[in-house]
Image (cartoon, rainbow, N blue to C red; front, side, top):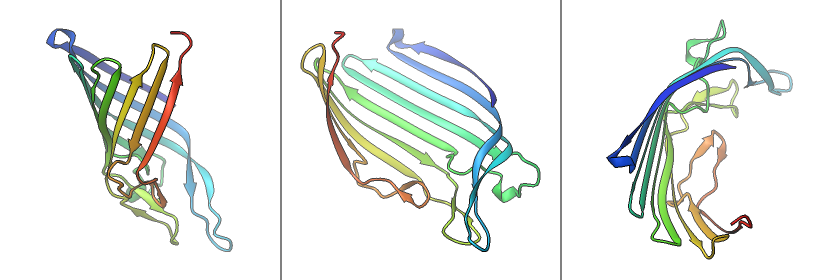
Length: 194
């Protein structure tokens, strides 16, 4: 692949906030993809896409006011198969959302940090390989909410907890493969360098 990105950052509010904007572009050759199989055994195979291109804009922002930290991001993406002979309806690369969003709000009043956030994808395409011939499908948009906390017991020990898919939504990042429902994790971090 060959690619480049160009962007800039701007500090605001005496350094308590920062915004960034980046344009990126990539040219890919021999990108791996999956192709459905035909008779007699219907076994698919991996193929090379001769040429593909991705490009887009990324926006990010962060602000810190006392113990409050806010972050937000947005990505607009165009991803296409540029190989010769590809039907217009199949030019768009699957599983690459046109719009991706994310945000987090955290509060850290000392040794404790608590926060909430979400990440999501909008305007996606995928392929349903359970039918023959396979068809392009819209797997729908999703927003994955989360809450988290961390308590730093000492400078080298931290206890962390996190709940993902907070609202127990059913969605598929890849069509036909549902993500897990609501789930909680707890962990302890030991850092002997502190």
